[in-house]
Each structure stands twice: as structure tokens, then as C-alpha cells.
Amino acid sequence: MMKFSSLLVLFFVFPIAFAQLRVGFYSQSCPQAETIVRNLVRQRFGVDPTVTAALLRMHFHDCFVKGCDASILIDGPNSEKSAGPNGSVREFALIDQIKTQLEAACPSTVSCADIITLATRDSVALAGGPSYSIPTGRRDGLVSNDVDVALPGPTISVAGAVGLFTAKGMNVFDAVALIGAHTVGKGNCGLFSDRFTNFQGTGRPDPSMDPALVTSLRNTCASSATASLDQSTPLRFDNQFFKQLRKRRGVFQVDARLASDRLTRGVVARYANNNAFFKRQFARSMIKMGAVDVLTGNAGQIRRNCRRFN
Image (cartoon, rainbow, N blue to C red):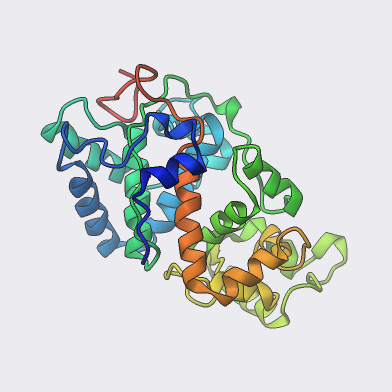
């Protein structure tokens, strides 16, 4: 697996955001920081391997609202956490556990935003995904409002989905790679039940969906509230998700469309045909996403408790 530790490469990819982020930011101030995070994530993964999907979702939902500033962790009736799209975000207790150990080792030093970023990175590797170095030095935000949460739904168009990523400084390869995190994800059956029951009011399933998948989802959703978005290797971080899309086995509508839309079908094919290429690109894309609208230097704060502002 390829490690991306070259600051030269990182500066070339995202010059402004990386101006104050760097690999090994805590090497002097809290040298055990990344080890503490890694060990606690490994413990949690051993109990529940779905932690990878949960942390990926948390990281994405944080970065795409106010930037990667841990604003999703703030408790309160009108905080980001309380917004509808974040109702399925979980593993806040794991972040609390990590923060508690870090505060004991290095008080007021490691940000909650960096904890999310590092924990997500480590959980991906545990699930079989890429292992990579990622810059740290983020600070925690001072704003968390539910009205700021406007995240895409599963029926968004491909152009609309890609546009969300390009607006954040990424490209189509990044967008498709990051959507590929669905390789370890689950979806609420209510978000796609029309595709196997009454697609667009026709009374019939979505004709673009593999009939075997229609049957499988009907059976799964009859007894469970959720279904795996990768029906092949749902707990393994690999490119099977893209192979499934090319076989018309995408569960979410936007996922399914990736394999046929002219904007993304070539990228899907490349990822489906080369697992190593997908993993390398995913690592690059996670590094770029982790630098979206970050606070550094004197901006923001280092929260002592991730659930509330200091």
C-alpha cells in the first residue's frame, strides 16, 4: 500500500489549505497522539467493524458543512448534530473516549477535528483500505447550526453530486472515489424502497436495477431497516462496489447512475478494473477532503470536550 507523506505532493495538490497543516503536527507537542487514536479505533473495530462506515460518514458530514472543524460533534437542540441528515451519524462515544485519553496525555493540545480525521483514516486501513499519512493541525470551529446542514440525498443527479465536490476544490476522480466509501456503507431502506417496489409511480421496480438485486433488497428490507450498499463484500474496503455498479447492482439511485453517466462511467470503470488504483486515489481524495475549509493557527480553538465549545 502506498503512503502519502510527501509534503511537496500535498502542497501541490492543495496549496492554500496545507499552508499550516502538516504530517506529524503533534510529533513534539503530543508524540503519542496518533498511537492513542489508532489503538482505540482498533479496539472499537474489533467489537464492531461497521465503525469504518460510521466514521467515514461523520467525517464527510462534518467537512461538507462548515469545513473539517468538528462542528458536527457539538450537542444542542439547534446544532448540526440535531439536523435531519445527521440523524444516522454515530460513534460520538468513540470520539469522546479518544478525546479523554488525549486530554489526559496532552491537555488542550489535539483538536477534535484532527481526532475525526485520524480515526477515520485508521478505520479505513483496518477494513482493508489504504494506509496513508495525513496532515494535521486543524482547530475546532466555534459555530454549529442545524440550518447550515444541506447535504445531498440519494436521488441527486450525478452532475449535482460531482458539483458538490468540485465546489470544494476536488475533481471527478475525487468525487467518485469518495462516493466509493459506500463499499462499507449501509442505507436506510426508506431511501431506496421505491427502486424495488414502485419506481417513479410505475408500480414496478426500477428497470435499470438487476432483477436479482430487486429480489434481494425486497427480502432484506422486509426484515431489516437497512441494507448494504455493496452487496458483495459489505465490510471490506475494496473496489467491489464499483464492480457491482457496472452489473446494475447499485442500491442508491445516484450510485447506480455513476456507472452509466458519461461524466463518471470512465472513472467507475477504472476503479472497478484496478483495486490498487482506487485505493491510491481514495487516499489522495481523503487528504484533499480533510483540508476543506479548515481552521488553523489562531483560528478556532482546541476544545477540551468535543461536545461543547470551551
